[in-house]
Image (cartoon, rainbow, N blue to C red; front, side):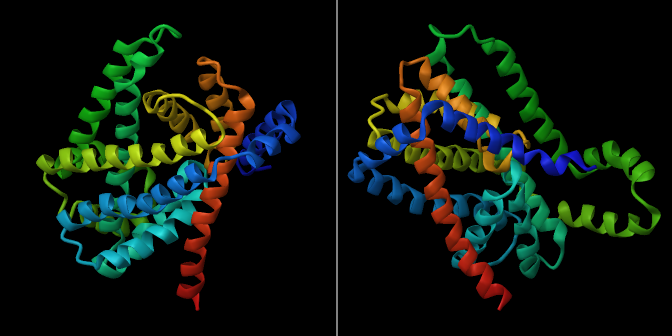
Length: 306
């Protein structure tokens, strides 16, 4: 039996357990009394999110010499957002590489775009979590120095693998031992195209900053949803809590962090005396907005197939 196929059930069962523990009626009551003015502001930032998400990887594509219209990039982002929403760790967004093949001629260049974007995404989350971890200084005894070392190692690893020659040296053993003979030529072509027009290191600061700004925009959505259900915490607390919840949600044991993210949010917001019902309601509204946003991608997927 393939146990991996059952992993998403962990998150779903955890989500249902939290819902039962909190009481569905209390959640519905919170959602019924939301302040729709804040919901409308959150929806504005949802629209902004699509353009900012697109702009950050589109900028990488420009420096890769991938020539494509920005509106086409927005459409691809809407499509990949759907696949990301329904897969663990949003790994479904890797399908972007297939859509970019139309403009690159090979899968490798699109894979490079995806990997750089994904790695810088994770780096930006860790950076935000470290930057605002002082919020927890009176609540938790966090080993900040240890996390800083991990972040620096993370950055050095990125800089190491940006070089084609260094990567080739490290991956040579994997290539010889684990790649089947009939796939070696394709693997070599993909590897070469992956590093074709790799952006120069000096531009990575720009890419990183765009990722940080994009995450801040994303967290503003949650902030205004929180205000709509009566969570009156300053945004700085969200910037400390949400990166941790995001990293937990990336653990591939559930679809889009369902269950694990809610448990983390309830625990961390609870440190600041925020009711679990309000936190869970905030999360549910965020999920509903995510579903609504992903349905836009479904429209484009159907049109593409037709």
